[in-house]
Image 1 (spheres, rainbow, N blue to C red):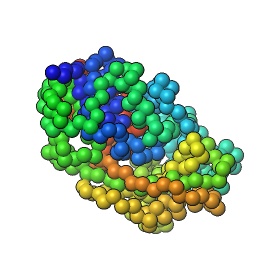
Image 2 (image 1 turned 135 degrees about the vertical axis):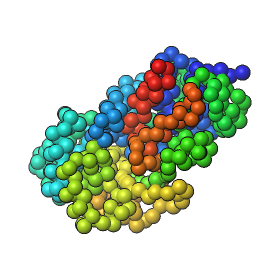
Image 3 (image 1 turned 90 degrees about the vertical axis):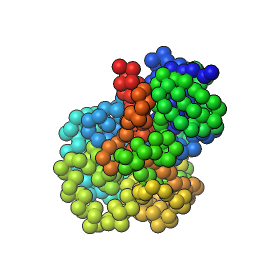
Length: 372
């Protein structure tokens, strides 16, 4: 009979974050996953630990705490932090006004508002139209395809977490997890299903109205020697990231974008560009919502992303070496869903695409509440 203090279903970043939080409490932990390795949203993203722009309050606090945990864990797990910081390139004066307002909030602590000349001096890659820029030192960038497996390996080999791979979970109730490998008994059970909305507690997910969002991303290979220096965002991000979008100053930019880039806004386009150790750029993304998403990428949506990219980096030559889609769970009214479908059981779903940025702190919060 298999007995643990905590059983965690799902080995994406949210499940791994809960495993770390539980292990740090001295608990015996098992992580169960149906796949041999992570293949979902946790590796199909920017590897971007985003703090600046997260919604003010709990989300921003969780992002700051998660950043600190990444800083602790990454060197121990052999995870490279490829670059640090974020520059938001404001193409329009209205975007610059948002950055100025943001700089004056508590979230703007440590951030610097740059003139176009100062921004170009610090980040020579910014050769496009520029009204102002905001630099934040808070962000981290890891290569998700490498970081998530390394994190799991470290939790297993060094921290003593048990992993059960290629194991399906059929049923969960208080103290008991039924799997394809037998029954597991655990005092606490945490279900981290990602965007699997049909296997475990589908009635709870349907009650909250969880759906999926599909995104498209690309890897670009620029000329040798091209350096970003930090993660990059533009005006379109300022109406999607709630730390900016909820500021009163965002209203003017929102109206201007709808008039000037209506198609981009409708496709959920906003530009993020990060750089990998080999010099390639991960660029995206778009947003389409539904319950069952097709696996096909739209060349038109990619063209919209690249249109914004060209505005910031005009004339930059590159080739597209990869093109992929990702899906994750989404809710309109909350950034993370934490539900109690049974005593000592929690259902935890990040519903905002912020798993890499906030999951470590969410794991701490959930374990703290369950053990209280």
